[in-house]
Image (cartoon, rainbow, N blue to C red; front, side, top):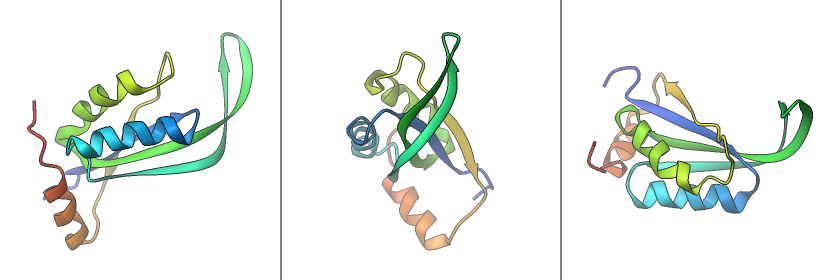
Length: 111
């Protein structure tokens, strides 16, 4: 196993329902081992020249780096934002039994 075998694909969404829809899609396709939805955060940003502060949820999708782009391609059409955030965050390691389980869960063919 190399140091970047696993990654998080991080995204922000307007609500838990949107995040869950994406999470279920990528796990069902075996593109991700698991997805975590974190709610109750505020995002501050500028959009169309105006300062915004919006309630959002964060979605952390646990996958292998070789599947990250497929995760994004699957998630993007389900994402309600015109310009969705998808960031790939490397995972430098973890406990071996969890990583073995995650490998077994992510069996989607690599395209």
